[in-house]
Image 1 (cartoon, helix red, strand yellow):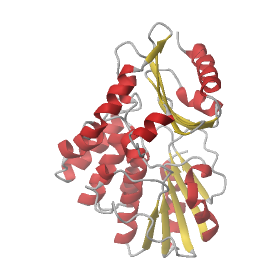
Image 2: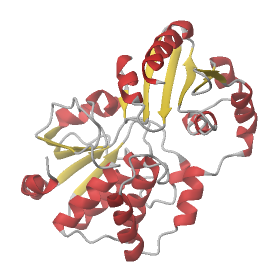
Image 3: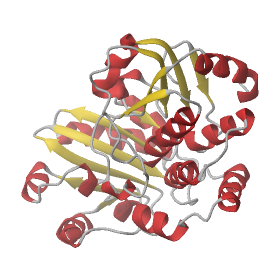
Image 4: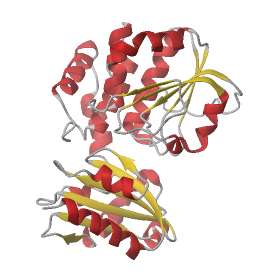
Length: 324
């Protein structure tokens, strides 16, 4: 699929709509937040009435984006002419906002995951060759000749930087850098501030948690796989919300010699959030799909209910097939 082949359909869907809902995935990351805000800014600039939604906590680190506090304000609206779903390949990841499909006359999905299962839509734009949904939105804006404002530039930079790990991940392409170069030329982006908040800053009260994680890392397959578990007693002890937990996996993944990592967080007794990361050709998305999860080749996740022993047995068997 080429985006330019679908541009007239997208333009027609937008032109024929006055009320628009824009939604990202549950427990939103920077790509989800940034692409939603960028699309919202564009739609409002052409006179549309727009509401933006995500299910889950929005990290305060995104507070530099103007529309940070405007998510989920249109919850009482009963009908939308158009629903635009961003960075989401599976309707199950809409969470509480799956109701928006029934509330909307038409649905447009723009995504970059492999093998999407989103079938309840009028138009699916799925382009896995793009590193982020933010890149697709930028390309869409180029084709539509949308003015890139300072707020759109900050939102799109956030999308792209977050889904490429600040340009460290293998999904980073020459086009990725081209888009960022264009955004930086158009506006004086606070690159240092955005990158510090998203990739370096952490709260001092998280030091005991980080220490716990570092002390309890296990290794397998000659040190190529690192495993960390944050049990429910630790989550409860330190009252860890999503923002406090997010990013802890980097302390496991970034060890020299580690090619892949497993980070398990026991959110409730017997209920685990699973974060899988890898370098190079190891496809953790395939492993995540084995347990009804998904994501990207080098960054995926899932949830699991059952015993930790059972979960680790499944994961270890899967990694044994891919780690040489």
